[in-house]
Image (cartoon, rainbow, N blue to C red):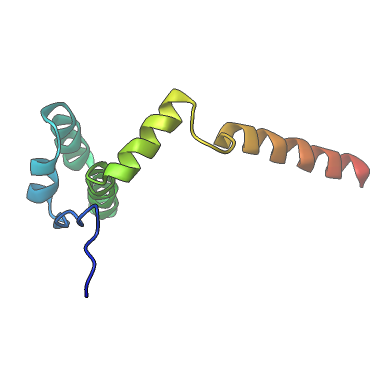
Length: 98
């Protein structure tokens, strides 16, 4: 007997400019094209990868729910800004103790 996932895996999006652009809503597509157009040869791969990751994540229902919870402030855990503030305070305490 085999089992099937409740959430079938979405089709992967190829890491190409055309595939990423096609997966984006119109408003984001223009921003994607602007960033790609402004990228230099050394950074164009990074720009493409960042946008590709965005569309990969956006296509995952669980990730979308998590992102919505983070935006609404209902996600479990502590915010990155809280963690960073605590780390700064800890570093300052250590430096004063030297």
